[in-house]
Amino acid sequence: MENKDYILELENVSMKFGGLLAVNEVSFNLERGKILGVIGPNGAGKTTMFNTITGFYQGYTGTVKFNGASMNKKKVNERCKLGIARTFQVTRPFEKNTLLENVMVGSFYGQAKKPKMKECEEEAEELLEFVGLADKKDEYAMSLNVAQRKKLELARALSTKPSLLLLDEVIGGLNPTEVLEMMDVIKDINGRGVSILMIEHVMKAITGVSDSMVVINHGQKLIEGNPKEVMNDPEVIEAYLGSAARRDVHA
Amino acid sequence: MKERFMKFFDNSIGKIGISAVFFIVLFIFPIILRGSGYGNESYVEGVLILCMMWAAMTLSWNLLMGYMGIWSLAQQVFFGIAAYTSAMLNYYFHMSPWLGFIVGPIAAAVVGLIIAIPVLRLKAAPYIIIATMCLAEIIRLVFTNLVDLTRGELGFWMMDSFHDIGSINFNGVDKIPYYYLMFIIFAVIALVCGILAKSSTGLAMKAIRDSQEAAESLGVDLTKTKIKVFVLSAYMAGFCGVFYAHYMKILTPTNVFGQSMMTEFIAMNVLGGLATVRGPIFGAFFITIIMESLQGIDDYKLLIYAIILIITTLIMPNGILNSKAQFLSWNKKIKKLLHKNADKQPTQMVKGDA
Image 1 (cartoon, each protein chain N blue to C red):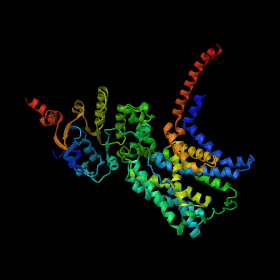
Image 2 (image 1 turned 180 degrees about the vertical axis):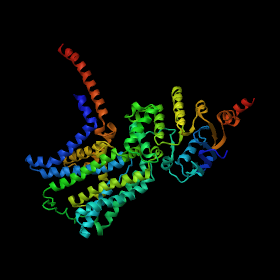
Image 3 (image 1 turned 45 degrees about the vertical axis):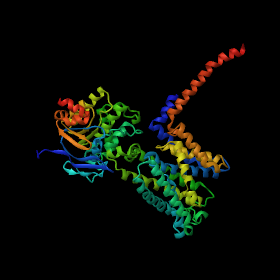
Image 4 (image 1 turned 135 degrees about the horizontal axis):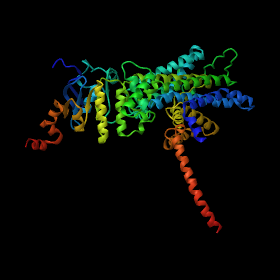
């Protein structure tokens, strides 16, 4: 057990907003090279937890460890340079920039070593090709639809050459074909050695790709385990469907 | 033919060509003017000096507002600080006005740094506007009330003109030396803005404008980039301030620290188009020349700026130079309208004949 190689470790992380405890003593680990799915009802604190890992919220207690080193005093851009990349639930493209420029920002500023602008351009083109937006590279990001925006977010996050990728509902709002496409892309990224932590509401999709799952409710960790165990847990069913459903399951 | 003409404006060689022609024309303009035998050349040169000065100032503000989306309304402060610094050092310590070009912009940059620090903590535009406006107003009041040093609203006018270099005489009788001095400042600032926009810093600036969170999550150091651009912007504005001090040779707090000058920059930049280099230049030349040719409307200046701002933001929010798509759609609408009328006209005429 103790010999396992963890890329991300959360130790008793709590985040308070005034009187509201959004994340309450959450601990879990992510093994290097694996995909960990995070599920939970709306408002359970999933995105807040993401923000503590990426550093957007600095006022949390507990420890976030990345590659064994504490990230607590590190700012967002520093964590990015060390290899933590994220996408946003509500996509935030640089709307008045071209897609190429969008991806180049991450490529130039997000890597540990600053490359030359020319190299960034080539990398950005490759990444746009990878997510399937190569033909739109000179268009402004404001012209994209939801699915394309999610793909752009992904390309942008990848441009920083992360070793840990945090995906905040990249599948939300996509149609079934697009979901399948996106799942393939995510598996492909994972195949290249990037560890992934993903929040998702589409159960079928997340149980299909995750190596293990964590369920969060009211800011607390309910259960952690492989997808099958988690989906059959009575507490999870209650959190998602209410106590009546739990009775039905038991009956 | 028309297509090709339009394309020429779009590709980068065309753009570089147009700006090269613009600067060459501006460079040889005084020579043409004198050759043409037009009597009042010193007036026209004076207007063009103002055009270039406001264009340079608007360009410097455009870095903050247009490219980085920081709603700082304190650009005139950098201008005024540099102007007063150079003028007062000249009067009290007999420093050469030429050295003002070193000291003035540095003073402006330091003030830029001081203003940047509180602004860094604010993310929403309204708070930044309030903070920068208040800072500008505080500085204006300080300069108004330091009567012993600045003579307050009476105006500070005891500074020298630029000292002569060899036979080049800066006494103001001949405007040519000032014209070329301003031309150099303006051209260098325009060039720096152009290069910066294409550089990696330009990439970060535009990313910050569109989403600070996303930029930060992609590794952009918000603090560093903002401070860098603030200081550079103030430094650029400082050159215009020093020039103004020894060219106009009278400084009053209302004139150089007042919000009316800032309003001018906003109108010029919004009219020409934010986040481009050509936009502020076009806006500054257009507005300055219009204002000069419509003399006697000085009292209504601010009203006119307000009207310009409202109209441009309503019908072409990207500025005149960035609204090609809009112009094309209007063109189509007008053609349609004309077509309809053309269709109607024959029938009406037949009726009339009958």
